Length: 277
Image (cartoon, one colour):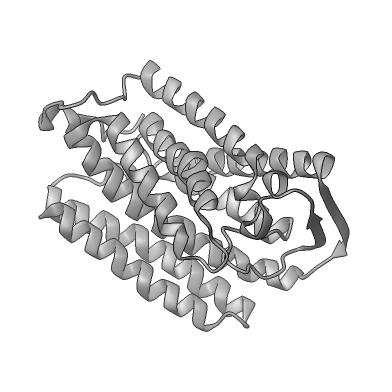
């Protein structure tokens, strides 16, 4: 039942927060405040429900070391998107025409914070962590990666390739980041860094969501395999390649730290992997 209660709590916060943030889409400052409140609520509710259902400290969202872990993930996410947009610039067409909407970028901070935190709590904190205890790291990473990709098919400009790309470059990478560090702060930072760099800074589409303009006024065009087309740079082959490389790096780190959970490992041993590294 802990799985059911934790998932219900995460979904409830995501739904209420998402509705609130979406309702103030034309008001960037309200969107910032409500988005940040949703992010904080998601972490607090997750920590509370884990303590209640598993009778242990929720170490994966511990405040100690949270800032540094979030910062590392943030840098990786921004750097990864920077590498992708650089390849789009040289292999297709990406043009900066000047400032776009700095105030819009403020609203996107809240929107992307809410999305990053609620999705990480749901997919990595609940789904990946508990499935991993029963099946091992590799099966859990594959299953939750597929689910994460499939969930993006609900977006307005989504297609099958976009969902596959998300499953590989994000679903696998973010689960691997959690497996390597045993903290949700790194995948949260990575997720937010990627999304905000894409929308808030470089003003590109994010997951086919009809994302509003961010800091820069930009134009992107060219072959869909390079630019990602209507789905945005997450559908670019460069995103898949860089995401796969970072996934491999995190899995190597998880193996080196002894954090990979083998298939059918006992529950008591698997529970020990929730300790922070």
